[in-house]
Image (cartoon, rainbow, N blue to C red; front, side):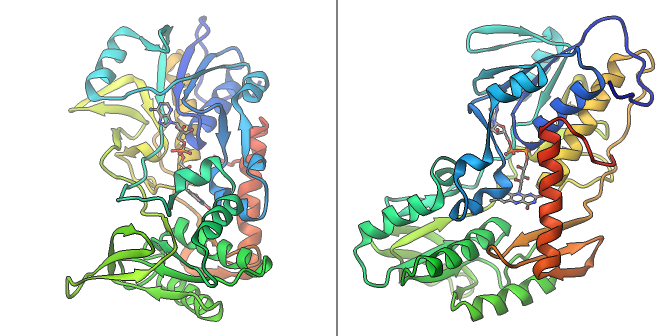
Length: 385
Ligand SMILES: Cc1cc2nc3c(=O)[nH]c(=O)nc-3n(C[C@H](O)[C@H](O)[C@H](O)COP(=O)(O)OP(=O)(O)OC[C@H]3O[C@@H](n4cnc5c(N)ncnc54)[C@H](O)[C@@H]3O)c2cc1C
């Protein structure tokens, strides 16, 4: 058992419920088990497997099964229990749970000392039809199967595929698809439709410059400054943002990556405890993309922050349950972010946003970060904090 500074355990084994078995939930689980192996942990998640979603675009190269870790495996590995259910979270329920210290999932009453909400962020929705795919589809079926099914159905000599959304997810899928089409010698056109005047707008300008050059080299058409309104038959409906004119473009398959909804996020204090109204709920912690912490730390919706919040929450739950009850504030700052541009290229920043890396160095950083997370899932924590 590793030693956690400022944690002097009480006599009782603590009971923790974690809702959400994604990056933040896994980080909370592994941290709790690292410092308190006898903690009784119940994981609630509607799925039956943990999905390493940061690799999802890579199913154009590897089987989807490579990204899945069954919760049954994690139950054995970490000595926890998984309940396959979805927990509805409202302010009223949070207050209720704080008072009652139990909740109901699948008709079972589960007692807890602490509850962690780590349910992620929902994707933005838009009108869909038969030839529209979203991130959700890729969570259940590998990229090539989805793509080929739709392209075969389109019966076109040179089908047009549209990727809508130029955030990290849209760009990563765009380049994976381009490379996949080339490898399979499939003659299809690819276009990127997005609402801004540059791609990867949340990152430094250098990302846009690099990606636009790569898109030109790979013959990917850019359609900037438009709003997506829907898809019918083989046409995508768009609105020019400046002129507000509606128009259509041919598209035989449209992939929507519209980003995450911000409306469903929960607030927390600097220690990760849920705040409802003005009141901190001392036994309910939140982490990951569903949370915004009132602290100087990073609230970016990314796996790095999700893992750091999950780990902090694990440590703070133990400290709160211990004899000193001294909690640690969330101060994590992301030290980089890398966006894959297919199997052999990437663009990212490291240490400072001005330090842009591309190609093999960027890919290597990404692989190191992913390997660190894989080790965590195996119970080996190599994170400095
Ligand atoms: C294709 C792709 C590539 C990405 N690449 C990167 C990257 O390179 N680097 C990076 O830092 N970030 C990346 N991200 C973002 C990163 O994946 C997220 O920020 C991260 O997964 C957030 O972790 P989380 O635990 O908050 O949520 P998630 O990982 O989304 O997990 C949420 C979990 O909660 C469960 N759940 C949902 N609702 C409920 C409910 N009501 N009750 C119980 N359980 C529930 C879900 O089933 C899921 O298991 C990428 C995202 C995508 C889609």
